[in-house]
Amino acid sequence: MPDIALYQPDIPQNTGTMLRLVACMSVTVHLIEPAGFPLSDSALKRAGMDYLERAALKRHLNFAAFDDWRRTHNRRLVLLTTKTDLAYTDFEFAADDILLLGRESTGAPDAIHQLADARLTIPMAEGMRSLNVAVSCGMVLGEALRQTRAFPKRSS
Image 1 (cartoon, rainbow, N blue to C red):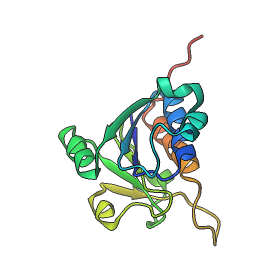
Image 2: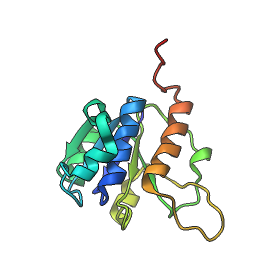
Image 3: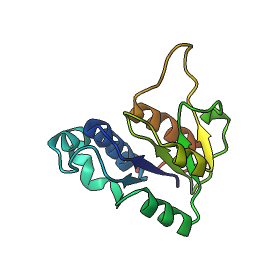
Image 4: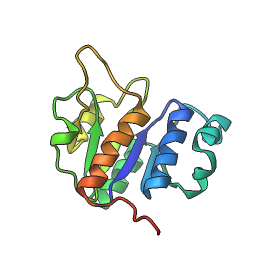
């Protein structure tokens, strides 16, 4: 099943929204520190609501620690970025992909762009810069789960 990785997130509400998303989709989120806010921030808890206890969260002290972990586990790094022309809808996802989202303020550094196994974008209307990171996460994760047939099973 694909995982999500958040590179040094800036905005607790976005992180909380993505924690709620991963809890609902039974996906793991990797939080690459340092975050731009205390992880116990009340805004994070408000956005994640009662889903936080159900979210699978792995914290990594920095990108190097995360990258060592993912290489040890032979996981492909798929960076979501506005700096590519490859649409996420034209990409073939694998079950063990990690979808990496950069900081809301600055995205991912060039060094991470170079390390990524793939760089994907969301096609948008002419003149538009970017979507909210949590919205982007939901769109691309949905497609990755669809392709890998990894949506959680509904209980009857």
